[in-house]
Length: 123
Image (cartoon, rainbow, N blue to C red; front, side, top):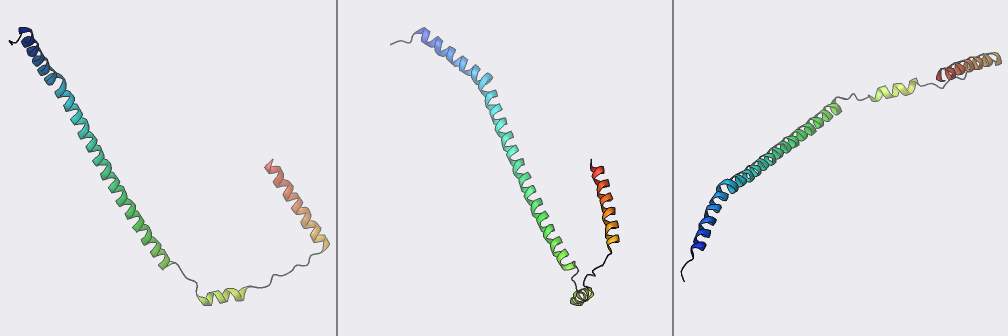
């Protein structure tokens, strides 16, 4: 069985087309895919670094907040028991004022006028 010339020419043409595709199409496509993969990895690394920094800042803020709480608990003035007793002793029974009917009427008129003025201001 002798190889046909057409089969040899087709094989040669196939080899040429394969080389053209390999150099003109496949290499740039593979290079583009690799660059996209590298940029994706770089972005993921940046996100991871930023997340770590954020966690550190949150921890630092939490520690600072705890320090301030302890400081203010220690430095908050505490009332002395003698001061509390003194305050209890100062308290007096409220005085009941006895007003005459005339004073009550004057006071009610004054309050009525004040309420009318305030209601007018609201409108």
